[in-house]
Image 1: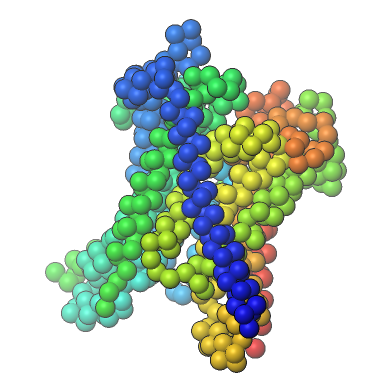
Image 2: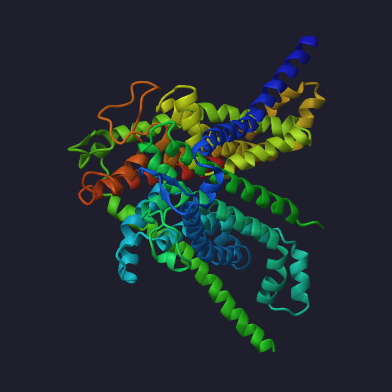
Length: 295
Length: 285
């Protein structure tokens, strides 16, 4: 009997250790990321990293300014969200409120296909199909511009926005909708005055996670946005090549001597990226736990 | 007044339909381009021969094998770890600070950009632990990336096991772990397998993390050990499409590689759905 209890305890500890490994992984990730990132600030103070307007990592007087890369990420992400959010929410409303259950059962896995396609395939599609098209359509020098990145990133963020919004909209209790319909409202009035407002916090969580997905995407933006590190104008910058934080890390890490300032600067950018998505995740998680409909 | 509302509804509904149609169109256009341009390239020879003439001819064999190694390597770490963690969270954990911390860590790992995992893998596995750019370093990095996916899928599978199963077993005087091993896990396995298979697709498609932890531009041979560099399908596609010796000339190989990737990822998804449906029928019998 005693032995059996001992084994039970042992197994519980083993399981506990496996679960705590996730915490350990996150902890180590922070340590290793920040440790190499902070080393940049020995030679280049944090203030210059945050306010310097240019990114010339390989010139004789190297400049490590975060701004052009941060704003590059922001403009591409904003462009993606502006087009993916209305489209994604509309599709989610269609799936949960208009489509028959049978059609919805087909549409849901169909949109999930988008989530499965690897980012490098999206990038490849963007490069061979969308880039030449954009170049012709707007009569530009190159089609590798922020807008192209925004369009592809928007498509990539769609499955996240659709599936989480759809969950939120379907979780609105039927009694509330029926109450509105019984008062003589049309189905559309019910959707946009009752159902969608009731699901709003869930929808906002979906938008947050969509932003997180877009800002962290690497291969796609690297292949279609041209990668020029200049501070983009707004909105004119949408039609110029930009370079994002993610693309900078992936492009430059291969050619950097380990332990150099440039090496540490790339880790500093990684840290900024990590902190950004960390905040987005915390906020989205907070909104999501609050929206659970209480009856 | 009511007339207006009816007209508004008509307009709104047609806009919603158009939005849905546009999303479906995106999927179809992307699939169409890759499939129609790629299918004539794929042959047994394409899959089993080495790249030739500075990658402008030949096949994708080393990249395909590299991707398979990465799948096996990352699964070997992430699958047992993820399932055990899910069992703990679902069967043992009590609400409290520690459980909150674990759940928070899992959600945040899931939302961390893959290139950040790449940086971490580079700093910890490649440099600090001294594995060098290698299959091992990349597999471990990818394992961390899919760990949250596997934990979440396994948790969902465990939740669907009815409480009566556990209570019936415990009532017979069986211990908690024996109950989990003999009753709960067998019932939850199909759901867990589905989650695991889905993350295979993720491993096959990820590029940024392996770019920083050991993927090679070109290797004339297969990796010899876990400490060798390797080629992989997504990185191969990236290299050919952006930095190859002759981008226009290798376009067919690019389409072929993209299609092979797509087939692996989507095939794996269909397979997972088929398994789930198969077991669902079995459970209901």
